[in-house]
Length: 204
Image: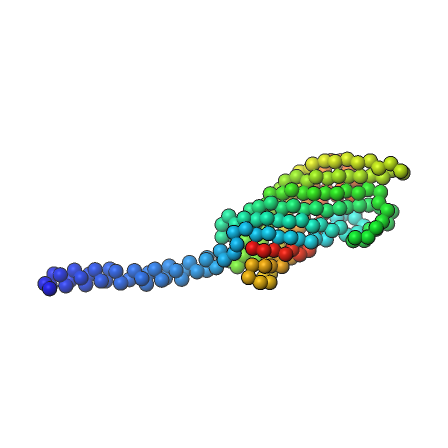
C-alpha cells in the first residue's frame, strides 16, 4: 500500500470514529425529554369535589370526568364535564341528606380545556377551560314550583398535582374555580362562582 493510500485511510478513520461518540452524547441529552413523554397519549380523570360558594350555608358535591390528549411534552388539551346540585332551604342541607328546599339548581358544564405542565416530571399542572353549562333552576312558592332552564357561558380555572400510585395510575388533588355568566336576578342556589376541591383518579 502506498503512503498516499495509508494517509487517506487514516483520515477516513479519524472522520468516522467520532460519530458513535457524538451519537451516544445526543442520546444522553435526549433521555430527560424522553422521560417526560413516558405516559399514555390519552388520559382520563374522574374527580369527586366538595364545593363552596359565597352566601352558601353548606357544602355541595361535584362530580365529572376529564379526557385529555397530549399535544406536546408540556401541554395537553381535551374536554371537561362537571355536574353539581345546589339548594337553598330553611335549614342547611348536609351532603347526601334530605332537607326542605326553597330553591334548587342542577348544573352540568361542558368545557374545552388546555393543560400546562411547567416542570419536567409532569406532576404539577394548570388548567384553563371554557364552554357552556346547562342549568335547571327551580323555586318553590307555596305549593307551586317554578322552573327555568338556561345555557350560560362558563369558565373554569384549576391547579392539580398527579401523585403516582402505579405505573399509569395517579391520585390527583384538585383545586378549581368555576364561574357561570347566569342571568340576573338568579336564585341563591345559582351562585355566579364557586370554589371546589377534592381528588381525582387519573389514568395517563
